[in-house]
Image 1 (spheres, rainbow, N blue to C red):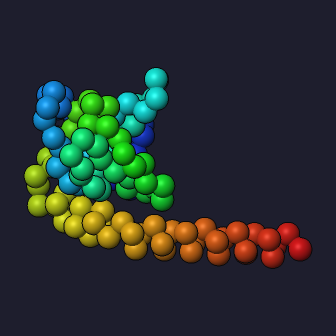
Image 2 (cartoon, helix red, strand yellow):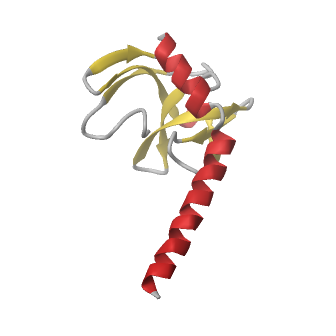
Image 3 (cartoon, rainbow, N blue to C red):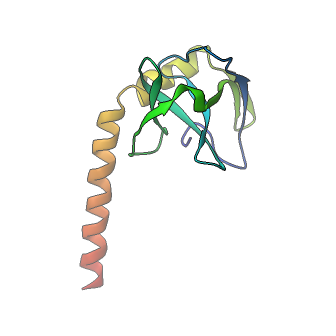
Amino acid sequence: MLPLLKQGRDSFTVREVKQGESCKLWDVVLYKRGTDQYVLHRIIKVYEDSYDILGDNCIGIERGIPKTDVLGVMTDFTHKGKQYKTDDIGYRLYVWLWCRPYKLRIFLKKIRMRLQSVLRKQREK
């Protein structure tokens, strides 16, 4: 969940999602991927019985995650030693500026990755 959370430095609190409860657009959820992998990513699209989910620093959207796979929703977090709630104005501003324009962010990240690849190949010559 970079840049919001860094493993080993930051922490977060997750509230259990009750059976039949639906999460909201832009919620950060903890869900189970496969049999033994737990993932903390953000909901970018809500359907009747599933979600599309994307990490804040990822380019691959996970589509059709069943609502039954979602275990909890993040309610607050500690970033660089300071605690924030997900309804704080600073967090909502982060969501507005960084998360909502995810299509643009993915596009720019792909361009950056291609440029880095070209530059690496030129150095190897």
